[in-house]
Length: 198
Image (cartoon, rainbow, N blue to C red):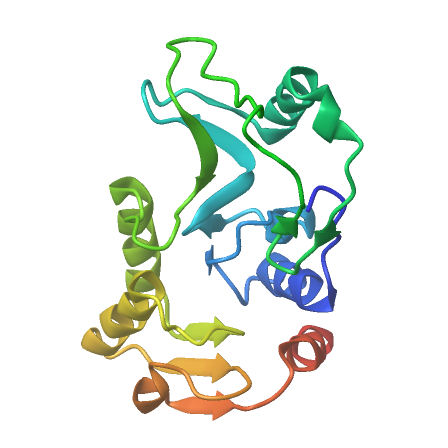
């Protein structure tokens, strides 16, 4: 993910924000591409894969630093090749009994990517920031999300409860289809690029 680059949709949203047509951007993505595209007001609802958090003391560090520590502690795995899946996972056929995962250098606690895994709760401060962002808009735009996870769906519930219109650009069914004032079943890259150009 470190080498991933923003696509035309990320860039279009950043242009729309620079033009004052989009305020806050709440994303379920953990890749940081909206920020790389130049969007300044991003709420990473599910965290950032580029960061690591200690479950013991809460210390945060860069994922790159953990990667170096993992390679130093496990040189026998450093050269192993694995195919990478779209979600960042990789399948590696190896015996992991000898694999060592470094602990937090401050407290010895367990480190994990600073992302919300399935079953985890969105940190309270981040969830509140997202709800407040929804409270402060004239309309809510949903782009490329099925809204199947509760953390995103409840933002639509919040908008609907406040009488805020919701527009979606998404292929296929979403959990909030009945809430939308308008839905475009279209490619979000093409639609957003057209909106940003117009």
